[in-house]
Structure formats: structure tokens, C-alpha cells
Length: 475
Image 1 (cartoon, rainbow, N blue to C red):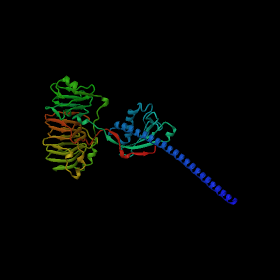
Image 2 (cartoon, rainbow, N blue to C red):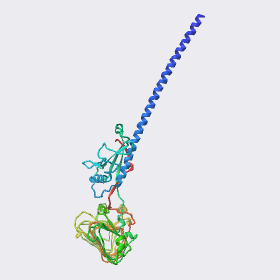
Image 3 (cartoon, rainbow, N blue to C red):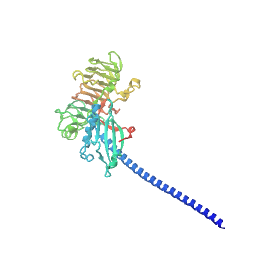
Image 4 (cartoon, rainbow, N blue to C red):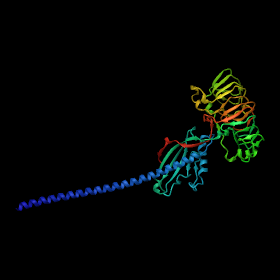
């Protein structure tokens, strides 16, 4: 009996030891699980906080990019601005738009000495505040380095608060912005000049709509507009304080009552806010004119007339595509001339208005725009470049002959329409430097060009983002 009891007790103690060991193992295991769970929970919490900070910083950067997009959409940079000066002109506009505003406070827009980088605000450690939580952003604008590159790169760094931690935990986004020509209503006016305008016509000058037969002049000459005879269906726009001379019996805007004309049909503009005239760029056409003009042919495609040739060109003859006039030159189209395309000057600045003359005289002349060219390889690109009939900076343009219709704008340094010219113009007459004189006994009328283009006539640019260039970058 004693032996059996001893054996049972030993077995019991052994089982208790195993149970205790298992209990301790489970205790250790649960302790490790608890520690792991705590560590995981703590890490997840920290990751969540970091993610929140990241997205708040990224949100601040995105808000800054929206701000930059709005501001760059407002700038206006002339097309004559060289590529190395583009960013400087953008900087000037941004200074006007932003300095002294509540967004900037006492901070200002800055540019580096090399004119290659604009900072908003000027110091790298300065920001524009977004809200009470301290979120903020800083904008850096840099220009393309290529000689033909007018694009700019906008980088925006965002911070989620004013804390020192946030300063080392920034987010940044970047976009490339492309230049885009600002929209213009300039060609809603049929007659425009930087010099004085004289109207001495036998017949009324009509417009479809009537406003197309309006006059705009930015000259300070006295008087800026002289109406000797005839009438215009549209209105007159001159500088503040300027008064046109309107002979009794003529009419403006449908009215022949002088008091009504001066009160309701003569408009004034501030000399400090002049409307932008187009800047000609004939180089885009010149590259197509590869064949030298030689007299004696019945038709020509994409020709240039050599300087000092001074030809008188009579028909029947047809020009298709580009007719490039090299300077100096006195070119006379002497009747029965069909121009299916555009006449342009080389715009080199060589010669004067005495040596550089384009004259359209005689009868039987016809024109049609580049968009009417046949679908042939030599015209493939030109067919998409319509909108004008003559772009001749540096030239005196004279009309003394008849056209059934002129398809496109007529642009020159001086324009004079005389004789018995009938001109039905789908576009505008624009005298870039001197006078515009309409003294014909024929019928003149203006209407918009149906192509809607003004290729070769540039207006100021603004900048818009290229969405495909979006990238998240290092701050």
C-alpha cells in the first residue's frame, strides 16, 4: 500500500509541473502577443499620423498649384519678348498681381540675378498661408533652357503646419506650363490704325454685323479720325480727350445727328490701357516660298519675289500658296491676278515706305484664302494657316483696283484705298504704324473671316499647365 501511494504522488507532482510549465509558456506567449499587438498598434498609429501629415502637406502643395495656375493664367507677355526674358516678364506681371495683397502680406515676389527662377514668396523659407491650421505653400517657377523653349516649370512645396517637424516633412508637386495666346476681340473691328484714319467715300461702309464697320485708332494726332464724306455702320474709338472731325451729313453707327454721334457712337480708351495690336510673324510662311519668281509664267506655287526686282505683274496669272516679297521692293499687281493664298513681306526692316510698296490695281483681280488650296503635298500645312490676305509689315499697301471679294485680313504699316475700288473684306484692315485712308468711290464692306484664324498675327501669351507633365517630386 505504501509503495502504491508513493508512485501516485510522484505522478501527480509530475503532472503539476507540466501544467505549470505550460501555464508559463502560455503566459509568455500571451505576453509576447500583447507586446506585439501594442507595437503593431503603436506603429499603425504612427504610420497613420505620418500619412495624415503627408496628405495634408500634399494637399497644401496642390492648393498652391491651383493658386499658381490662376495667377499664370492672368499674365500677359508680348510675343516680341525673347525667350531669355520671358520669365522676367512673368515676374513683373506677378509682382503687380500679388505684391501688397492679403495673400502675400509684407512678403514679395522674387527673381534671381540670372532671370531663371522666380520664387513666391521671394525667400525659400517663406510661405503663403492657407488656413488657421498652419498649412502653407511656396512656389518656384523656372524657365526652359532651350533657345526656342518658352515653357516654364512650376514646382510647389507644401507644409501641413508651422511646426519644426513640418518643415522637414514637406511634399511637392510639379507641372510644366505651356504658352497659350490670350484670346482677342481685336478683329471685331474692321478698320484699325495706330495712325490717323480718314474716310472720304462716295458710298456707305457697311458691316455684317454693323459693328464690323467700326474704326479704332490709338493715335494722339489731332484729329484722330476725319470723316469728310460717306458713313460707317459701326462706331469710332479714340483716345481719352480726342475728338474726331465728322462733317455734317455723314453718319456713324446709323446716326447722322452730331450730338448723338459724339455721345453714343464715339468711344474713348485710356492711353495707359491701349488695346493690343497684332504682332506679325511672317517667318512661318516664308519657309514655304522656295521658288523664285520669274516673269512669263501663267501660274506660280509658293514663290518669293527677290529684293529690288520692283515688278509689275499683269494677268491672267494665278498665284497659289505663299507670295513672299523680299525687301526693298515695289510690287504692282496690275489686273487679272488671281491670288489663292497669302502675300507676305519678309519683315526685315530694310527699306522705307517709299521703297516698300504693294499696289493692287486694275480690274479682274480675285482672291481666296489658304484654306481653299487644293489638297496637294506642297499645300498640306498651309491649308490650316488661313485668316489673312496680306501681312506686310514695313510696307505701304495701296488699293486702286477692283476685287469681287478679299478673303482675310490686310495688315501693313500704311494702307490707302483710292480710285473706284470695290472691296468686300472678310477680315480687318490694320495699319500698324501710320495712316489708314479710305477714299474710294467703290463699295466697301466688312465681315468676320469665316476661318476664325489669324495665323501669322501674334498676340500676348499666358501660361497653362500641361496635365500630362504632373509629377510628385522631392521638395
